[in-house]
Amino acid sequence: MRFYVYYRDVPKKKEMENAVNMVNGSLPGILQSLGLSTLIERFERERIDHEMINTLSDGELTRLGVATIGDRHRLRRRCTEETEKQQVNKILF
Image 1 (cartoon, rainbow, N blue to C red):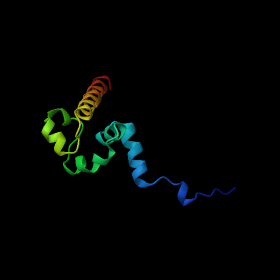
Image 2: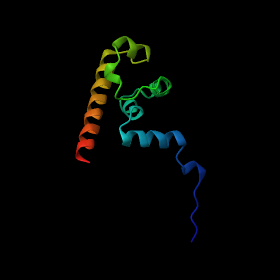
Image 3: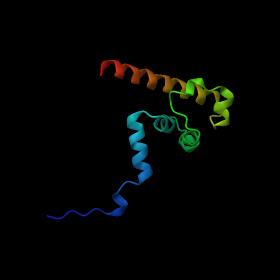
Image 4: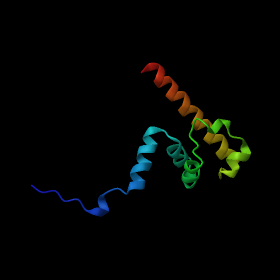
């Protein structure tokens, strides 16, 4: 029995990275879930992770491209939830 895999059926590298990020709850996954995926490279270039988001001012987040107050609020809330989730996992495991 032979199996054939067509190139078009193989996920692209960026698609695979995005899927992994969504599972891991990392900042790229959070940005993507909030519709801010265009900012992923900028946050990576500045070496900002989800634990740093709440320490950034509104001005800094605006300069990074998070222009609206609602997006900044949602981003901070999701990053806080992710940080709390990781802290609970450290305690339990």
